[in-house]
Length: 312
Image 1 (cartoon, rainbow, N blue to C red):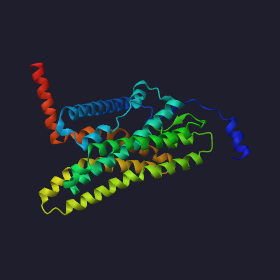
Image 2 (image 1 turned 90 degrees about the horizontal axis):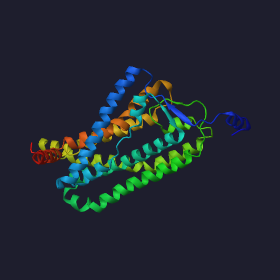
Image 3 (image 1 turned 120 degrees about the vertical axis):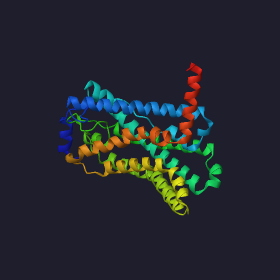
């Protein structure tokens, strides 16, 4: 930094809070968005809680696929509070913590989705070795390492970011605190933090992505070799739900972070961000589970037992 740049930084006022601009100031739009996101949050939470209850209650669901699914993250309701009250301010520590939680859960989800793709690979391509390879110990270790690696990556990035002071205007043209908007408000030279973040991301993220990609290349190759249409359809149905979620997750995540920093593309960035921050958690119980015949039967069994207990 030059002396002139240091002087400019010194004269700037350090800010203690941000204002998340979200999706604009139209009161009618805010009400509509609140109702939409409220329904999504309620369905997401109820669906995940119901799924956990079913997995615990029915031994048929004690499988690696549902073990990893139970580890997938749920959303936090900060967006709902902003839409309801109209108060879009968030303190710098609160914004940093939101960024940290988002990074931790997104990183963990990358690994859990990879674990689920590997589970489908073994079930379709190596069915005779499935029980031997996909053991309870392996599942616990994979889930633990998923959280640990995401925790280390997020903590390192968070520790570097937390040493920065933020100044300039308070507005963040987004509905949550992400890396790029925070960097833009940093008073310090952010090139080092940016490079370190890229290095960490390039170390942590490619492994689960490549594992997922290679699993599905093998899966699709194996399915295409099945002679009968019924057999191909049955095999594909076992992984189609997961493939849909993986495609949406990585496609939107990739587009969001490779889009140029352009004001004209900011609205598109926010819309795409909704997919992996809001719709993917909703898809977990709906796409993965409620379409599954075993889950439907377990739900019917639980409801029947409840009705008998209540004397209905």
